[in-house]
Length: 209
Ligand code: GAR
Image (cartoon, rainbow, N blue to C red; front, side, top):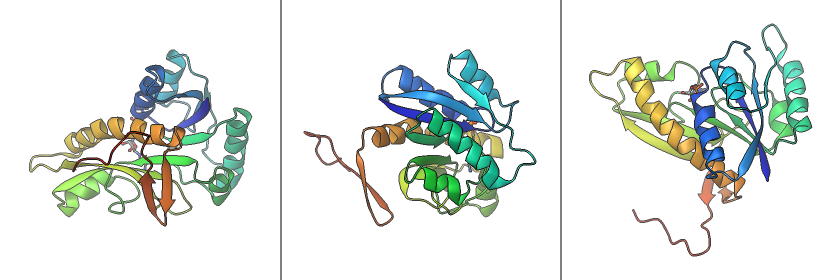
């Protein structure tokens, strides 16, 4: 069975949605490690409560690659096949990316390539876009720039605040991230340039539009 390593920095609601999918058997993998760069992260507390192996390696004050080398070693020690960043608010060094080629996923609360970076729900509101959403992509050496596995769109309403928009997007994150992880775990994707194409299971027809 494939092994997942979850990286988080905060609340951990995406981690919880992945954990539920694993526990329900929707994702046929095990979570071998939940790792946070912030020891006070709620997500790490939840991971322990839920009975997962959870570790904190504080990143504050550490040089990027030196920190990443330690994290990569821990992930490899736990035989992790697929790394899932779930609100892990750090940029990965090329060393990290190369240690898990095409095996690191990230979720981002915008319709990439619009609004990479931080505070993106606020940026979407300020820009005045009428739709926003979330993206699951393969992490590469660019910021929020790797090939896209899944996206979901939500409307931006006239009376939205950063909070209401974030919540609407988050509900979609909890739906598409486990789906994307499942595709990876089942080796059901192939890539054509930047395009990620879903390989259908036997007997599955083309999706109706
Ligand atoms: C999520 O909205 C996720 O998309 C975002 O952080 C939040 C974490 O929430 N990630 C990024 O902004 C990465 N650039 P969670 O801790 O409850 O899963």
